[in-house]
Image (cartoon, rainbow, N blue to C red; front, side):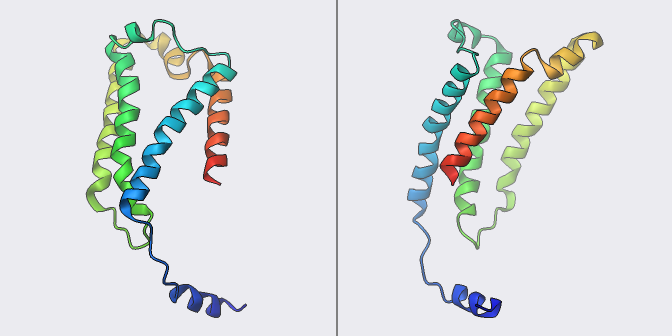
Length: 148
């Protein structure tokens, strides 16, 4: 079929987009799924969930590492809901996720400034690089499978 005919058929498409509440509900269902996949990746890469997890949350750095991605997710949900529609305009909605990313940058700089320069490579790279690559790969492939 020639490309012009295909474009003409696409223009005539009268399928209405899904209602916004259904889209938001679908996105909210992805949160427990991502938590379950993270836990599964943690178990499979031999990095068990910390036994003293609730105690560790009293540390501001640990709390920030948990809260900032969650806040980033919440700030991106309305943007993702808008992007399901072809005529979507994001506009100023990106300022909130960008501000959250800026907070992450500020916290990283503060942490590096408070530590000696000799410890920076360990702080930046960490000690669990192989487990991290395994976990990220597993989470990404599971997420790709769900998306497809």
